[in-house]
Image 1 (cartoon, rainbow, N blue to C red):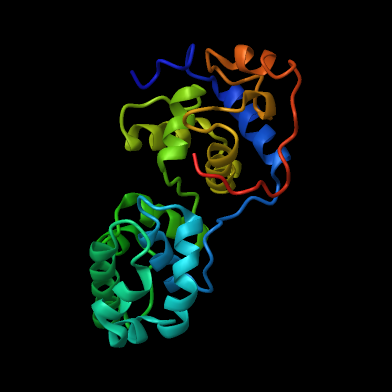
Image 2: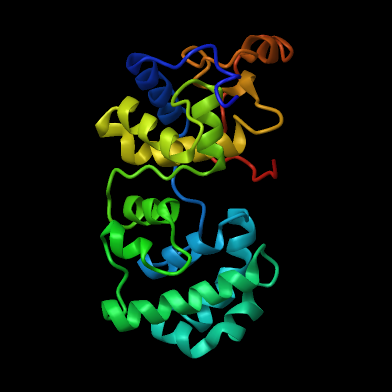
Length: 240
């Protein structure tokens, strides 16, 4: 059922056109999580699981003020971390993971966030998606983190159909030109967050309308006058 919304998978030329269109519509795309270094990025991404970036940013200001590095996070303790993050989902488990990963960074990595996938994924609370974000944003690797937004886009548009996040990730890596792969992570996430939304995709605002293989795209555009409306440079945060 994951490919039900797309007529067919995109070809590689279509994928390049689609990604190029997103890039031109939002050239300054970047992570909306607030962080100051690799450690705070890692913690913010761990906290963002099943939570919005907006909700995470509301709690990390105080958390990072009190614990800006792994040693300080250990001193703050699991209960102290929990007190900062009670408003986000799964806060108890996340507080424990942040405490444990901080301790592992100190004991195993001299307080530094490792730059290899195996070491990242060995940290408590860090899976493949989180590791990919850190590798992409902090270390400049062409890693593709597949969250719910990118998983939806991959299947709905035909960009990279797949039943699992790994299948979608592999499809994106194989279709997106290598020189565009790293920034494509941000273009796709923001496109899914503000345009290609879960319940009500705004096809009339989609820069990648032409190569997109979504079955209902024409119906949705025609319902709004049949013309494209450009995406603003910094969209207003909404909950979808």
